[in-house]
Length: 428
Image (cartoon, rainbow, N blue to C red; front, side):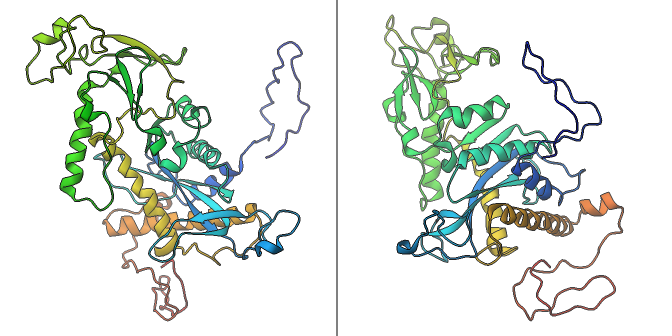
């Protein structure tokens, strides 16, 4: 933060601060703004940044081992790094699930549009927190920081973020105009009464109570199931779509409400309580509603944004459309594996300083370097002009791209005009 070089004047009646003169150097930046700006320095300004990001967290183990539980100091530190906290690491093929002293690194990566052109796996920004703390605050700060470098209209999150209260996570994102694509925890799923009689909330979406019983509670696909088994489950989730309420008008930004229309009015089902719908094709599902009885098929209603706000999303959970959109989030998992295993080796010993601020700065520089290398590798492998080469006006580099290796004896490609060396360089 750079402070003001002049006296601040405040209007006594309104409490508003008078505008600064044009020469005032004051700048207010969050740590995430600084770290993300460093990360983005690895990308040319002319590089196209998609309006969609995926965010996930990974652990960064402190260089200093945790104290024994019976020898913890009075100050509350768990190791020689005063800012480190407890981090739970998920089991992998390399290690079991365990706790360690360190930080949680939240990363954002750009994801392509559905059926869009493929992109290199790059880091769009980062946020660092001690241990598993303030996960949602870190994600929100990271989104704000990435938005400084281009518009964001869509964000993808897993269940590690979506369990927060709606007012603390989903609402701030939607206020920014961001479409949230999220996975639902088991506590967020299920069938609940809707806002008016004849409606039901099912897995975060609003449906008519004419939806068949076998479509109300469906178990999602599980790891280990065959493609055919997953396809059959997706068909059940897709069958719900005919009974879902759809937007009837544009979202009311002033009131924070959305007007919806029932499935019979939308032309998705035939219902005896909506006579016009019965003249539609018999290929549409026909509800079992009783003529004259109350149902939700042919009504319109206004739903406030605050209702079930942490569970709602534009695409119905586990539908085929949702699956195609959400599984673009795999790119951020790919980014994690690249910086942990395949490229930068961000594991124990990679950072050997104490404190959150020095650790975050060193990680930011490492991620900026990763972006530069990945841009070069991806564009050269695709036979395209490398963005930094174009921006700097450099001649094409026609040398073959080397392979990443941690071998301390493997020969690597040297700079132009110089012989190869055997010194260890995992960034080749």
